[in-house]
Image (cartoon, rainbow, N blue to C red; front, top):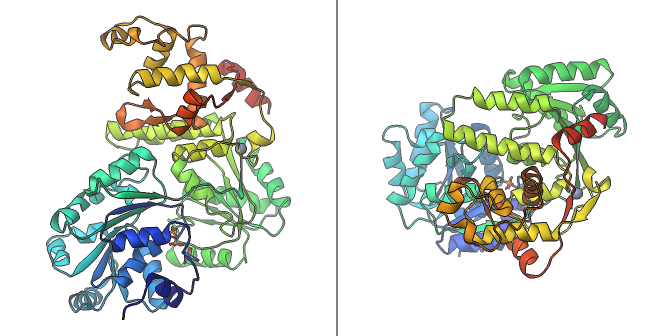
Length: 519
Ligand code: ADP
Ligand code: ZN
């Protein structure tokens, strides 16, 4: 008799209970349906396809982009007594032949494969001739140009469902906003898949931002206040990690650097020392942390600003996996922003992808410059509804003076509703201010009830308030529909139930800049 999912959880993994959503997802997949799973890193995505793989008859094919991650997962499965292997470019022909034989003989439950390997000449046909019971697409945001880590080979994965439409597919990712989500499902050919989203909130992480001056001195104090605690400092470049580690050593902090340009052995040495608490401070590029499972990282510092909110969220997420209080600090300077902009300009990406990267960088900048609860910004970015400020970020702890902006918000939201959620910032401001330009007339927007309802505010003021509204989750934005504003549950609560909105009074850019300089 085959085991139930609960028995498998206990017997193979040694766990007593499923985490929220895991059981539902597993049942849905076992029912033969397509699914998309959004869970933060460390949330427990792997079980969502590994357990169905063990319950089902045939082979589960797992598409995974990172060779290192593949290796780790397969090792962990084997250690638990589960028949799993991987095929990628790192294997010898002999090793590969052996695994292929096991596949044909039905001896494996899970086969991990990289998209590159899958799409090498003739290989796909062979794979599809196996007795496959489930497709799992890990890191599925790689399929979307709206995601932050687009990989062109991923876009060919739509052939899987085309070839075997009855085999269920489960797409997993830790990071995707609403637009990316929709795109992933379309690209994989599973537009009707049920989407399972677990909360992205990590209340044990404190959030703060400081101006990017005297960074070493600030880090030195930060570490001095946290004796014997482990932490990671993320830097922009390999060179940066070396110079920052050096600067910290000079002030008596035993820091080591880590980046992908180091020899593999040296890298794993540093990683192991960190895992075993032999070194407390790692200065690293984003290469560090993928696939390492250290639960007591007490803090994460960003020496410079990441290029988007997804990456930022993922990186701070390496702190406090044990659920205990942990701190995060982001350094921000205008110069960092310019560097990021240059990197996008020089990236060689096609223009439309550059535009997406710029829009994502803009949201990151808004996080750094925020005057509203930073957790609100993070969670609303992932389209999670937030009702209260968090109380555990620097803005909440030292709040700017706010005013009741409910009427302002209602005017904007009502105009968005009356335009059929079709307009972006510029047009919306024109409507609110009653500008009679040609595009307004063309769309007959001058006939709607809210036309000119916001005349009393200047265009700059509106731009500022709309941005604050977006960041606090009062409405959404659709990057794939020319940045049109969209209403969400919170918007309707404000329009229909009189939910209150508090915003920070507009100040001209120069004034804000001067305040920041003074801090
Ligand atoms: P993700 O892929 O979402 O980053 P993983 O699947 O690697 O996360 O899971 C993160 C950790 O949580 C792993 O150590 C995993 O064994 C553990 N885990 C997953 N599900 C459970 C559960 N139901 N009970 C206890 N631990 C779990
Ligand atoms: Zn807050």
